[in-house]
Length: 377
Image 1 (cartoon, one colour):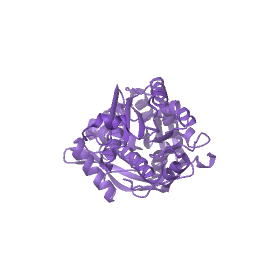
Image 2 (cartoon, rainbow, N blue to C red):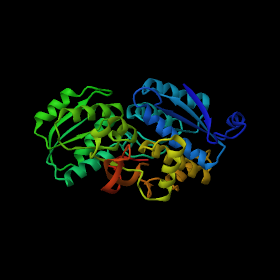
Image 3 (cartoon, rainbow, N blue to C red):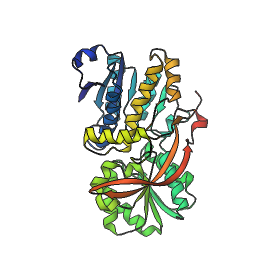
Image 4 (cartoon, one colour):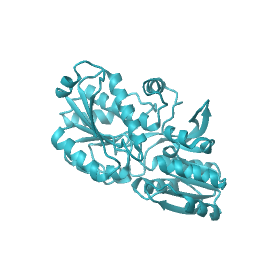
């Protein structure tokens, strides 16, 4: 599936503008199958920011990777060689990022990640043309580990899917959790039946559970866990308690603590405007993925306003300056082009008929990542 659109979606003569666009952005993201909601939110947040910017010189070529690395690589090759894009973005899953990003930046393209932040691209595999606008994969899990320690948990059972982001998740949690582990499991990516894992949790003697299971995996686990009656407190990252996931999980998620770099109640004008405009345009509350897409587009726009994209050194410096108003408030890049930002503690609540999150504290303040020292640009 291919969608070609412009930032000014309602402008007359859109096809003519597309042919003459000065800047081409290639967005490869997940729009079908498992995890499609994540890619749709990133896309919609990104396109909302471009629409609000009023710029007609940015063409966005959008492709569906179907959550398959080989398809993502094929699309990237086409965008770079045939479409001649200037900037790439959009990938949700870390295994797809590892398949696409190194080759893209090696060919001189800028890559702005609105989501996936594998450790391999934050440390020794960093690149001067790679910027992550979301987080390094470990970050929200580090916040969960810090919260679990502060909450007094002594024996956690932890689980995540066996792929780069899952591995980073458990590494991050363990980095900040001061207690012991009652168990540690890597599940299958895309798994939907967690009876065996829940049985192990029940028998483990744990006093808490930490899990990272994004998308449909998290929906399946939470429902089955609630039905099991195990009853241990659950801590997780925002990926398992995202705005879209919560509506599918329902009451089983109420009261669960999770960690995020963003929430709809962060108090600043940019975030308030984003939440209101996204809700009005798309008739749903935004997720952290939507906020990341929105921020990624605004970073790009801020750099384009101060530097020529054909002058790579100047454009890179403009990206590094991060001179845009983030939905998160204070935002800066570390030396490896990954964010330095707060990681918040959220609780799942219900507002009317809508399940959502509210911030109840801060787990980590102005937090970077553990791999920056290994990055040599």
